[in-house]
Every structure is written in C-alpha cells, then in structure tokens.
Image (cartoon, rainbow, N blue to C red; front, side, top):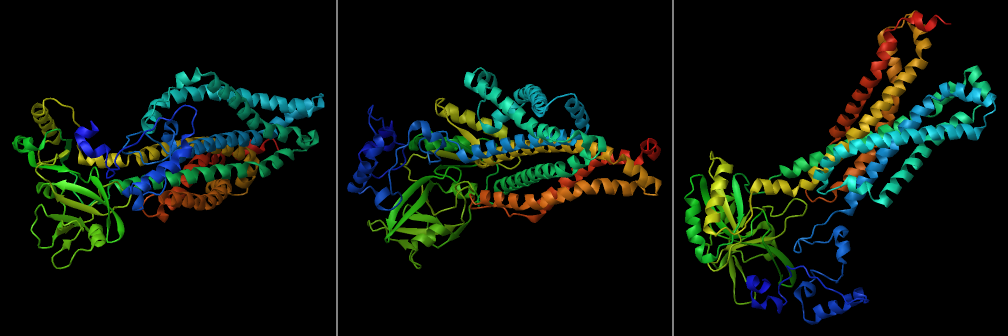
Length: 585
C-alpha cells in the first residue's frame, strides 16, 4: 500500500521522513546498543534529516512506553498522554484529600474542649494515655470507612463525567475486583483514619484533668490549632480557583484567536477521487443549492499540509507546503499582497516568515533553488496559522495544484443563509454516490479548530470540579467552626449587648476574626498561583495575559462565600436575647 500510494521508490530512497518506524528485536538482545549503529548508517548514506541538522540522534522507544514519552507520534497515529498532566491531577487529588483530613482534624481539635471532660473522667477512673489514643484513632477509622462508602457511591455517579473529560474508561467496578487495588484501598482507609485521629488524640490525651476543671483547656485549644489549619485550606482553595480561572481564560483566548483565515461555514472532506474525475465532481458539488465555492487541495490550514525540509544558501529550512487551486484563497478568505508576478505552475505564494527566510530577488521575485528550476513569488500571504496555537507558525509555501497530482482534501464553502447541516448532508450524499460508497471523513472547519483545544477544555473542567469540591469541603468546615466559635463567644456577646453594642458591631467582631486569616491566606496563595500559571503558560507560544483582576476577583469570591457562611451563625448570635446567655452567671 505504501508503494501504491507514494510510488515504487518510496522504500528505497532517503527523501521521505513522514513514516513511523517499528523494529522487532530478536529475543534476548539489547536493541538499545544498536542506536549508534543506525545513526552511523544514516550519516553514511547522507540522510538529509540528519546531515541538515533536523535530528541529531537515534532513540529506540519500547512500544509499551510510548504512551507517556511525549514524542511526536503524529505520523504513527499512536494515542499518547502527558505524564506531567496526569501527575498534576494526582497531586491536586492528594491535596484535596489533605484538605479534607485537615478539616476533620481541625473540627476534632476544636471540639476537644468538650471531649476533654470525657477524657478527664476516664483518666480519673484509671484510663491511661494509650487507651485514649486508641479510642480517638478507632473513631477516626470508623468515620473514614463510612466516608469511603459514601465517596465510592459518589465516584460511580461521577464516573461518566471523568470518562468524558479524560477520554478513557475507568471501569471502577472492575477495578474493585482487582485484589491489589482493593488491598490498596483497605490500607489507605486505615492510614488516613490513623493520621486523622492521631493529632486530636494526642491533643486531648496530654492535658491534665485539672485544666478542664479550671476551664483553661478550651482557651488553649482555640488559640493554637484552628486558625492555622483553616488558613492552609484557604490557600489551597484560592490557588486552585485562580489556576482554574486562568486555564479557562487561556482556552477562551486560543479558541477565539484570529487565525488569519475564515473558518465559518466551511466543510472539509477527504478526497478519494483520482485527478481525472475531479472536474466532474466539482461540477456536481457546485450544483447543490447551498454550496458557494468548491476547492480541491493537498494541504489546508486545518491539517498543516506536507513538510518540505531542504538546504538553501547554506541554511537548513523547513517549510509547510500547500498545493491548491485558485478557489482556495477565496474560500478561506486569505489575504494576498501581490508582487505583480502572474500566477502559474512556476510561481509560489509565501507567508511573511517564508519570504524572510528565502529572501527572493526584489525585482523579479525569483528564487533560485540551484536545480535549474527557479520559481517566482506571486504574492505574500498573511501569516495564517496552519497548526494549533500550541506551536509557533513557521514558514509556509503554497503552489498551484498540478492537474496530475491527487488532492487529498475537498474544501466546500456553504452559502450565507443556507442551512449548513442540511447542505452538508446533501454534499455527503452526492459525494458518496460519486465515489461508490467508499469511506471518508467530513468535518466543519470551526469544529476542527475547537478540537485543537479540547485538552485545555477538559483540563479546565477537571480543575473546576476539583475547585468546587475543595470549596464544599472548606465551607462545610468554616460553617462548623464558626458555629463552635460563636458558641464560645455567647457570654461575651451577651455582655457587649448589655453594655450597648449593636448587632452590626457584634457581626463585625465575629466575622473579623475569620477575615484576617482569609486575607493572610490570599497573600500566600496569590504568589503560588502566579508562579504555577506562569510556568504553565510557558508551554504556549501564544498566550493570554496574567491579569491582576482575576486574582482580585478570586479573593472577593472567596471572601463573600466565607462571610456568608460565617454570618449565618454570627447573625443568630448577634440577634439573640442576651438574657439567655447570661442567666447562668
């Protein structure tokens, strides 16, 4: 098939590098030791890909490791993934788990004053420190088991969402049947339960019963633990929210970036028709009511075309190549700055980067390739993007399609006002009837552009889901902590109200204590989020600005949600009858 499609010499000449190469090693041998031998072979035969500096070494990659190598496997059409991205997802998941554990520890420690009376009685009745620690850890493990059962149910509900955004099949039910996976879950439950229960256990077990009798233990608990743990949770939540916002902003930036060509109402199809039948097919397609223009080409801004790497005036250059008909430029609305040279089979069009690289004669616009086949530049086109914005736009060369060259794409412009989907169905039917029902692919240009950034969209969805989960955990903890904090302040609130304090002043006093720690968390989280976003944006040659207002909006959102959660408790305390809190004094 390779020889049939590319010509008989394709497997004997060194001029084509557009194929993935597989080698089956002999059993028991170390094929990696042959990398230098193959490199010497390439250099011996003056393989241009190496002699002109486009590649410098040879590396054999086991097929089982290709998935996470990050190598360019576009020609081999192998499904790959980013190990860095998977590591980020895993890190965020662990971070959310840590936030949940800290939330549990924080709530347990804040309630330790009340549990202290229970512990004091047990100590007076002969229980030792070890017994108290075992009790708290056991309670934590039981809580973790219950949480796991609920979490597993939620995981099954969320499985379709993660299958969609991760483009995979998780098969949670099947995974649970795996002994090693199930054993890992059991171990994790007990480890998480033990970690969550140890700090509260040590906190309660180390005090002296006399502290509980004097009432000093509750004050000590309140002042040491809770605010630090809450601040850490706020740092995580603010950083995740800011990162999610910037990923969404970058995705929106790329999807709406001016690519230099029109992509609206354009249908791109695979062409399986030989060159001699192209005029007849063009006539049939143009006869469809909703069709405006039809173009046949080898290479478009949607697929990047062919690559042509060559040496020119002592420099190694790499150009993308389109072979098109004259309707191509009108359909994609590509602007051309004419040089005055009449287009023919001896002319080319260049983008500005290609023109600067070749530097043609400024009078005749002739490029001498050194092979008795000079070409003239008919015009300079705007720097259209013929790849996604993940890579920089390089030099581009466009020539007229030879009548004997097999175009691999059909580009159809649908008329304004016509139903694009109904017209597309008519186009597909006409083409299918014409080519005898051979399979082909057809897609709208704007859908193709959107797919370029599907990875960023999925990352934004996952990070948004993680952020929402973090906020739910955080606000639940804040709500419970504020309830406990307000109860501790009931008598103080009663005294202040008796002495003339207003409800607004009481609300400010109760909320301000939490707001200070939120502000501290914001100050810590912003530099961390800024650094993470800056590093992430380094992967993109075209990127959005790191806007200060996103950080400000993030802080305001977090502050508002927290104040609302806290105020639900502080309002009740501020409006309560002070007699109820003071009648026992």
